[in-house]
Each structure stands twice: as structure tokens, then as C-alpha cells.
Length: 220
Ligand code: DC
Image (cartoon, rainbow, N blue to C red):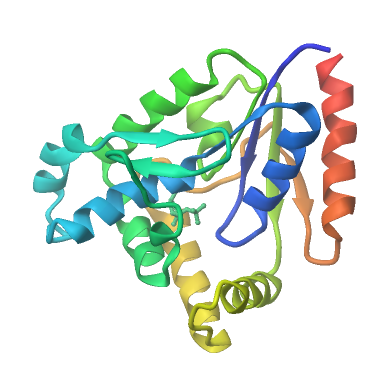
């Protein structure tokens, strides 16, 4: 079977990374979490005391940022393992801001395309099917209601031993949806040729099975 590129886009907390990891494992593909790369930029901005509004300064420090994702999906920023550190709600909100800057997007999209060159890859994000890999053989747009997504994130935070306030998480998701869908550059939107899957009432296994069926159809 041909080793294809699979793009999974969709709003925050729609379960993209969970699904992408499961599919990658079944197919023995590399999984590339592009959101983690944007999160690294936000984390760098925060830890270096840079003003998040200062687009020019952020543009000029991008060359200091070296991101590496290993085979176990650990995320390294300049050789520091930041896998857990980049998941806080504060970093999520900052990431939504830095990801609206053109230079940040150009910097990361270039790296994502290189990572995907060999095929046998699954990338998740907001602009994979529309911008990063417009020729991906399979494009999924993974949706879920705000309520479902907030509840999932709430449970995830509790499991991680993090603070969890359902109302705050719901507002946070709504705000990030708004920012991600309304930014000028590469806003979140379904690619014309993407297949939409609403996972609100589906189990993980059902979503995986549906995507695996689609892979079989296009990958033969
Ligand atoms: O998928 P995530 O929640 O880790 O993404 C964090 C933020 O990064 C999200 O608010 C939008 C942004 N992002 C993006 O603009 N483009 C991508 N390909 C991936 C993420």
C-alpha cells in the first residue's frame, strides 16, 4: 500500500491528536503535531519575557527556535523537553495569538512540509489541508460541538492533575475558535476536498475505523 500523507484539521480540543496518534500507530506512520510547534514558539516568547503583541520582535527571534519531535511524540525546544510545559491553558491562549503572525507561520510551515516529504505521515493542525499539504491524499476535518470539546478538555486536565473549570474551559474554547477562524492568515477552515467527521457522539474506535476505511480507499 502506498504510504500517503494524511491531513487532519479542525478546531481546538476536537480530539485530533488522540485520533492521529492511533492512526499513525496502526499504519506505522509518523505523527506530526503541528500545534505543538506553534506552542513551542509561544513558550519561548513567554520564558524569554517577550511581549506577545510585539510581532516584529517575535519575527526576529524565530531563528533562535529549534524544534524537534521524537518518535515517541516528545517535543523538544532547543533541546529541552517541553512536552508537558506547552499544554497549559495560558500557553494555549498565547499560541492562538502567535500563530496569527505571518512570519511564525512561514517559519513553521516550511519545516512541516520538509517533515512530510517522505510520505507515510499524518499531520494535525488548522491549515494542513488548505496550506501546508494542499495535495495530501486524504484530508479530514474533525469537528465536535463546543460542549463535547469542553467536557473532553475538562476531563483531560483533571487526569493530568491540572486545574479544571468547565465554564472557563468552554469560554476559552469559544475564544480560540473565534481567533483561529477569523485571523487574516491561514484561518481554520475546511478544505474543499476534506471529509468532515463530527465526533460529538462517536467513540474513539468509531472515528479510527472510519478514517482507516478512508485510508484504505485512497491508499490502494
Ligand atoms: O492543536 P493545538 O490546540 O495544539 O493548537 C494550538 C494553537 O495553535 C491553536 O490555537 C491554533 C494554532 N495552530 C495553527 O494556527 N495552525 C496549526 N497548523 C496548528 C495549530
